[in-house]
Image (cartoon, rainbow, N blue to C red):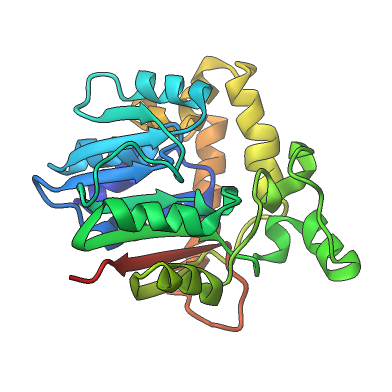
Length: 282
């Protein structure tokens, strides 16, 4: 996959963990022309947009939330991507019908983890690849200081329905360690080939700034048009990259901070995310 073209699509991305995660999972996925690939729990479809623009694969996305899926259809209008509403524990596909599966930031939302893993196994062809990412239970303090303090002192966190305080726990039923995600996939029959962690350094309260404040201002239409075009991850090609645009100043600051995460593999550090490359045996 063309890294320069991928970086161009990610220009507007303010979530530095998301911006780092996409190239990792795309590298793990290694999409090839003609392969049938499922994005399971595709959200608003950014990964599918990347795959549609930069690969020749046959693409399918499923999403459970009907409002999200409506936005996905709009964002991916005119592409060759097929979309369907479905639950990850009951997928509407025949056995062994996909060459590869992508599931990013989804498994942590599903109460029945084993059922979801079993469905991935069922629809994946023998020797097929399965790429996942999940949030790390050992996340950086500054990413979500509020919940980190609660966890360390009271062994609890804010519940997911209090979205402006839930932070790392927003709509999540669990977080993962590298060992626990490896165990979940191994128990489901997969061979885990690689596990990596990513994004330690960040600005204080990054989660709250990006999702608690920024995302809500954007989705409620409360930002000026020029700022909105620079803040929406789907509008990167509409951003004129002007240094005078306040949002572009913020994006450059975030990328400067994120450079400290380049090549970072120290196991003693906390990390925001975990990425996994697995396969189904022959």
